[in-house]
Length: 363
Image 1: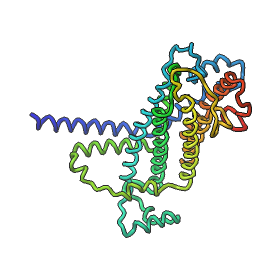
Image 2: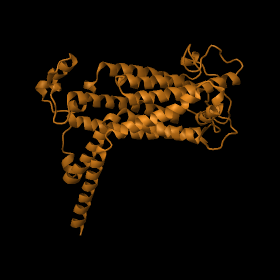
Image 3: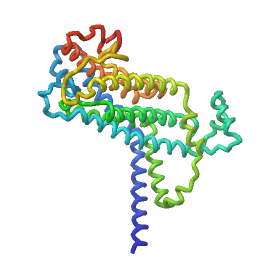
Image 4: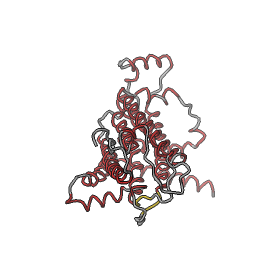
C-alpha cells in the first residue's frame, strides 16, 4: 500500500510544481508593475495631504488620523486603534520575509556562477578589479556576467535590509519602552505590515520570478532525487561569495550612506528609549537632546530617509521601484514629522525654536 501512495503523492507534487512554474511566466512583468502601482497609490494621498490648502482640510485630517501614533494621538481617540507596542510585528515579519528572500536569491545566484578552477581564481578576481574581462566575462550555462551583476545588487540590498530590520527588532525588544496608553490607528498598523512586506520584495523584484522558478525546480529535484543525494553537493565558497565580488562602486557608496543613517537612527532611538527608563507607568514626556536632535524634532525619521536613500544609490539610481519606495518613505515621514514638531511646540513652552521638523535648515 505504501509503495503506491508515495509515488502517487510525488507525481502530484511534481504536477503542482509544473503548474506553478508555467503560471510564474505570466507574473514576469506583473509583479514589478503591481509593486510600482502600489507605491504610487500609497504616495498620492500623502502628497495631497501635504498640500497647504484649507480647501482640503478634511482630507488632510483624514490622512493624518491614520498616521498619528504614540504621543501625537489623543488618548481619548482609541476607536479603531491598537497598542503601539505592536510595532514589533513589523520587524518580525520583515526579518522572516527578508531572510527568506535573501536565502532564495543568494542560492539562485550561486547556481548561475560557473565553476572556477583554482589556477584561474586569483587572475579572474584581479581582472575584475582592474576592469578587464577575464573568465568572469564568460557566459555560464545560465546567465551572463551582466545579469549576475544585477542579481548581486539585489542580494546586497537584501543584506542591507536584513541589517535594518534586525536592528529595529532588537530596539523594539530592548530599547523602546512604550507607554501603556500609546496607540496607533489600525490602518496605520496595516500600512506598516504592507510596507515591510513590500520593501524586501521591491529590492529584488526584477529577479523574483527567476528565483521563484528556481525554487520550484529545486523542489522538483528534491522530490525526484531525495534529500540524501541533494545534500551530497559540496559548497564552493568562492562561488557563494561571488555576488559580493560582482558589486560596483556605487553599491559601496550606497552602503556607506545606508550605515550613516543606520548609526544615527540607532543613536536617536537610544536617546528616545532612555527618556522612558523606569517611566513605563506614566505619560510624562521630556524634550530629547543629543545627536541629530540638535537640529530637528524627528531625527530618527530623517535617518530613515537617509537609510532608504542608501538603497537608491546602492541600486545604481536606475530602479524605478526603489525610487518609489523611497518616495513613499519621504512623504510619509515628512507628514508624521510635521505633526510631531507641532506637538512639541504646543507641549513645551521652552522647546528649542531653532529646531526644524525633519530637514535641517529647510523644513
